[in-house]
Amino acid sequence: MMDYRFKPISKTCAGTGKPLVAGTLCYSVLVERNGLQERLDFSAEGWNGLPEDAVGFWKCHVPFPASRQVSTTDPETLLRYFEQLVEDRNPYHERLAYVLALYLLQRRRLRLDGAHEADGVEFLELSGSRGEGPYEVRDQKISEAEMTQLRQTLDQQLTAGGDAA
Image (cartoon, rainbow, N blue to C red):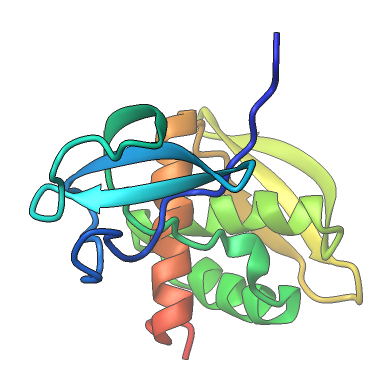
C-alpha cells in the first residue's frame, strides 16, 4: 500500500483563477505531470470535467478557515481578561472564566491551591504563579462541545479586542 501526501485545498480555482469560497462545492483532482503528482481544485463554475492526466478526483466542500485557538494568545493577556471575568458575577462570564482558568492552569500561569464546596456548589481555589489572587472559580462541569464553543468565543473576543480591551 502506498501513502500519498499532497497539499491542502487551494485558495483559488484552477479553472477560473477566482477565489474558492468557503462552504461551496469543490472538485479536487490529482494529476500527474512530469512524473510529479499535483492537486488541482476547481469551483463548480470552473469545473469542465476530468483533465486527461487525472489520476483521481473527489468532491468536497471548501472548508471554513480554522479559528485560532486561545492558546495562541499571550498568557499575561489571558490572565488580565480572566481577572476581569472573575470580578463579574454574570453566569456566562463565569463559564468563560472557568475555561480560561483551565487553560491558564495548563500553561502554569495559575496554580490550583485547593477546592471547596459551598451550598452544594464546588469551587476551585486558584492563585497566579507570580502571587496574583487568590481567585475562586465555580466548577462549571461543562461538556467538551461547550468547552470548544467557549474557547472559540474567547478567541473571537480576544482577537477583536472585545471585552479584553
